[in-house]
Length: 604
Image (cartoon, rainbow, N blue to C red; front, side, top):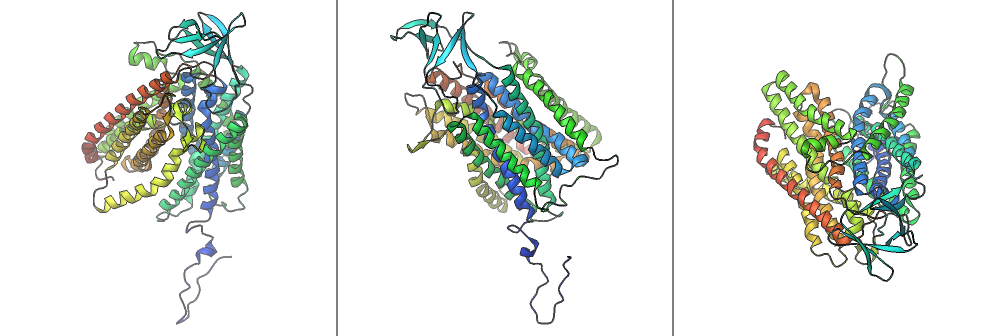
């Protein structure tokens, strides 16, 4: 039935406006927003719940070692941010947003549930002088929480067990049962290896690849559907996306809280299964929407018929391609000492070369085209955009240590006691970021508004500079807190929480303005390409975040460090270095902000 305007009689009350309740609004927004909000919340529940566990799963269950684990983590998150470029295009041209979201949800659910089939943990062994020795661990439990206090033993052919003790200089002492040093190995004299099932490694990589492909279909298109709820010029749009953004953070908080709990209590399989269940809930909300989403994100009409089956088939075929990229990444050699930048680039995995090469050629290529085809003003605006994109790579490279080196730091060198009442697990420490975002985002919005009224709001380049300085200050805050570490070489939990709070403030300086900045500065006829470069920059940052985390790699035995002092010193040295690099680049960008602002020609 179509509502018709009521005929108003003289003296009667004004009833010409529709009752919002009749329209089915949700907090003053289209009621469909509630369905999309919940769908995204459960998707983020699964994604962040799984992500919180991944690095520890690789180092503890598969005993990959810090270098391989953080590199694989970086490669996975790089693909997660890269695939939406293709998924968004496919939805626009062929599938429609709704079908893309459903297909992506199914693939991601399959991927999370596949991770639950991790099998038995890899069996660690040590290689000393070319000879292999079994590593034995008393009371071993395959779980996320730290086992740093569990003793590691090297089993001798005679049946004797020598306890492994790491020394402050990086050497290793092997202690006999009576406590005397039976043998001392120089730094690097023992290699930590493990018997890994090729089939279980293949299952792991298939799962990560499936999630990456599924995310490409889901992530960009759920946001597109939110935008479609509002007519052009509807002032509620920004507020609607703010509500939607809260769903993202709520899902993140819940996933990073409950998935680690189940992994700790029942095993890794339970944590990953819960992430998969969350993803299935997300799919069911879209599949059985009760007609609420009819007319939104529908399949576009094209000549030549429906191409859905072909697209689904090609997406499935992309999974083994991603598996190959992951295998190449795991087998890439470390650069030779003294080989310099060229040697380092040559040592990158195929995935790294493709990402780095595309970005390195794409940025100057677009600028050359802008100079040739655009006006002087357009060229200057494009230069400003590209400079900010480059600094964006640096920010996210350092910020995204959360899921890799900072999680390992939380596991090994953090006292995770909460006021002595209870202890949280290392994966749960990542929750300090989304909680801080939820609390601080409204305050930051108010702050920018107050400053804008006084004509004091920082420009976009200055906000980017503040973000870089902020991420550096966060690391220095943690380094300062480490000076108060006790004889157990563990830093208080609240110093790590402080880092996440500072990093969240930095994130709020750069994340909300990035996409808007690209759309405003880009030449109109290539704005889609520039959006692609923006997401490519984040993908490159995710990959190199894994590379940076590799510099904080600590020698382990059976997946655990044997000397917490060496571990603490290694992390603090890396964090200090990247902190001063971030601050230095932030200061540089601050100095560049004046010419950049001039080249932006009034864009704010």
